[in-house]
Length: 423
Image (cartoon, rainbow, N blue to C red):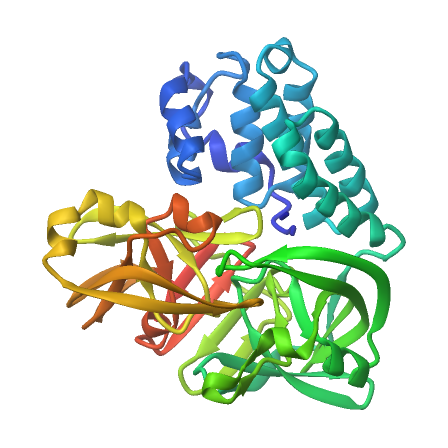
């Protein structure tokens, strides 16, 4: 289940080498990059590639355009692929293209069209996938009459943030005359709220129940709601879709902690360029006065943020999650560095989400110096899980969390330039 910005054409990103250097792309490299969700390697493999120089090339162009936030180019390439003989001869890749097309429609808040795309995908999917797809179709079908989310800025946004009991960034949002603190969470694919808060803020409830997965592996029933208008300082966001959970589903009595709401990826991305400072400010410029240089180091996998980083000169692929208190390495990193990891301290971790808690096996290692976003943060301790804790943990090396973020004076998430920048 998986936003849109950056109106530049796909060619700007992918054809920097120029027509004079056009060549056939390394399709094996592209296939491996796709398997690993590594849009950065795919971008390199597609540089200067001749148009149509390999069967199915439009699929990889579409996937990479989606990753670097070119939704119009992505949709055009994916439709081109779906109409090609290459798609007819590869049912699995055809389903992947159909899934990506649905994801693009979600990013553009075209919920009814997305529901139709996922319904078409369900028809050609194996029985094992149909239940999940029916759930997704029900979700976006229920939103068919909801207008597209919009953002308007009356000026620069510069508002305070706070830290909650779990040390997560909270931001005050206002709906009507009511206000509430919501977690600022790039890792949330949809914004989330508990029932009591949705009622207090006057959200419009939608009579549709869906099943939502969590890192615990438990599926939890949720409803849907729409916030007609949310205000964050000088920013007004309209028609914001929320998942609605019972209060108890986001309560952690072990630590006396209750989540009231979460601002997720669709809102954060729509703001375009967001800076969080160590002093506790959130800033969004109403106008970009200068052009940012440099290559993108941020991409989107569905609505997950992926970022390039490195350790000791080795390039790694990380998830980026402002809702994670600490950074963490995943099984891929364990498998690639088994001896070094297992020389650390064996431990167990308790992870939580909607639906409860789960215990997983891990090792603790350190110190580790992680270079990301133009800066280096040294963590004295970091956990390496040996078990997956969600889909992203199957293919990235780890997640960057608050311990890295707070090592710097400020962090900027720029969805126009597709860059994560620290200073």
